[in-house]
Length: 124
Image (cartoon, rainbow, N blue to C red; front, side, top):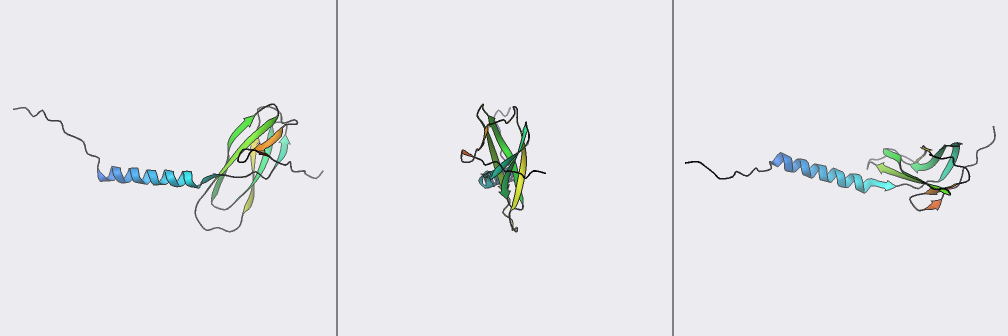
């Protein structure tokens, strides 16, 4: 007699554990990854600006979005902070490359849609 029953594959305990760990890591990543305010910008050249933000130790800070129009440049910055002890905050400058010259366009902070002040550098 031929056995025609279908055998079901069971997910093993190691696969379940792996799925739970991946889910927890994803929740922690998305829970700790937050928008970071931009405090100033400075013009490097016609096609590049540097945006200044404050971030702490054990933090991955990066530009996550850039949108250009004829009148403005909107920059989004996010920081992923590890929940580890650290001392103090540091000013980080991130370089943003533009598709068109900055000219008279306004720089907008994407985290709250407000304009960012330009940092006036002293003359050499």
